[in-house]
Image 1 (cartoon, rainbow, N blue to C red):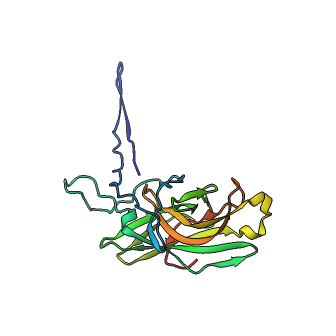
Image 2: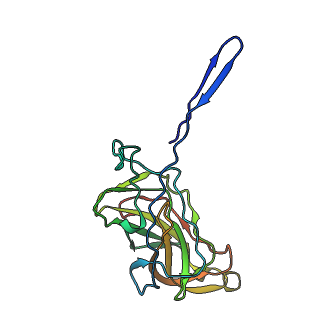
Image 3: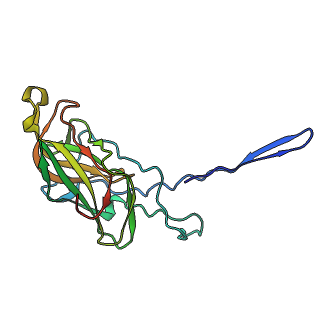
Length: 218
């Protein structure tokens, strides 16, 4: 968290005020965008189509005592898109709502952290065209920083409305290929295959996503 210190010194005829400069968090290193539309499994996002903006965490998570090559500020330990493998776990449903864990696995050789919400949207077609609006953020979970060692896992629950229970005229159901996922604070997405149907009418039957938590269970 950035802190600003204000110091006031008084004399009979002069007042001086000063404040410390803030140091911006280091921007994440750019990653290579996805190439072509995947045929299954967790791969890079299909090209083209509308995309939802990534969901930023309030601040970058840093490791205490760790420094960059210049020996200055601590280096960011946030998990980048290239560090992660995404899969869909076994879901459950009730009253027309489907709950599915989206599982993040650290496939890198370093420990990294996740905090907050991923950006999620339904996509269709070979170019990954977005269907309806992005998933909303749910308050079912409190946001916490999850530390993933190499091979470690975390999950964000996807809460989706069964398009079949919504009136077709209102829903305008459309076949989807899967999900476009942006890990927190990242601008490169991952495509996850999850065929089905979703409402294409704007704002109707929107999905929601829970904050990321450790493990693979809902």
